[in-house]
Image (cartoon, rainbow, N blue to C red; front, side, top):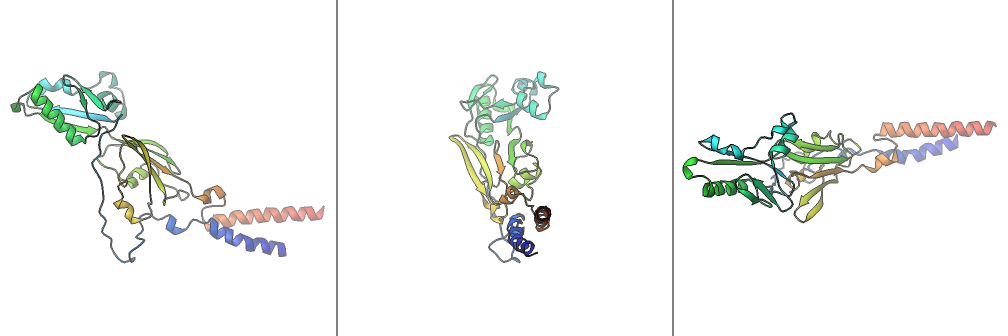
Length: 264
């Protein structure tokens, strides 16, 4: 009986240490101000600059649309393809030299430019080499969806494409099945592409100040990695009830084993 009591006393700190605290689960906590205050958050987002392997959707409009057909390709071989595949066939992929190849205009360097800057670049080139001002040329350049990858302790890992101009990290995670209780929301890694290579950034999703982070809005080709909490590796459970149940089961097993040994 004394041994059983000792085991129960030893189990108490294990129960509390293996439970996941409420503060580690809740998003966007106001950790500095009073609970009844309303913080003013300024979102930060810098214009995205085109990287190698990005796919651009370019469309040219004008008064005489028949003369602009060549600039608006539609891949016949992709008629039965899904949206992502059509974007690949019909879009303009940025090559390893940071260039895209447009019919008639040839190669244009776009690496490091924003979509608005590329629109102006193509429009000026068309008016200079192919058309007059009276043609009323209008160029639109967009990324063919915002593609990112979510991995680690997340509901539905894998690559996703969202057809929006901007996507924050919460939207990206929600579209990837959410972070389970066993995921570490305080140290989410954002692996981002840069011209000189990849960099890893960490953000705390439980802190409301994450909305001020330059990594709050994801960019094309970002990788979101969520590491598991240590409680998951212990295997005792994620709540006090689960942990207590596991420990009681273990104690019962040990007690039964001891009793059987003593009877032999």
